[in-house]
Amino acid sequence: MNDLFPKTPSRIDPLGMILIIALIVWRIMERSMRLYLKQTKSTVLGWDNKPTSRPKSYMVTQVFFGIQVILFKDQQFSIKEPTNRQFAFLSALGLVIDRANMYQA
Image (tube, rainbow, N blue to C red):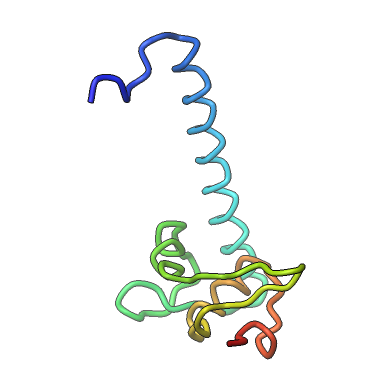
């Protein structure tokens, strides 16, 4: 276990920078969802299926858990069709989704 943790500053600094970048991306994702929902005056289903206009980024990771997408020759294929709740979160993130062509077996 001891070998997994960086001990020198030359290894600690890059790890810290990666963590900071990850937190920035996390926050931008949350902020863009909230701005979209505020502008469209809409909500998404949050915890316990209650509507919310202020979703957390952690909630997104839970909603998207298990989604698998295959990229093949510049086309995207979903293993199984995303639920309405997942599509609502994708829209809130500003991703353009062609629902008719996303699911192809």
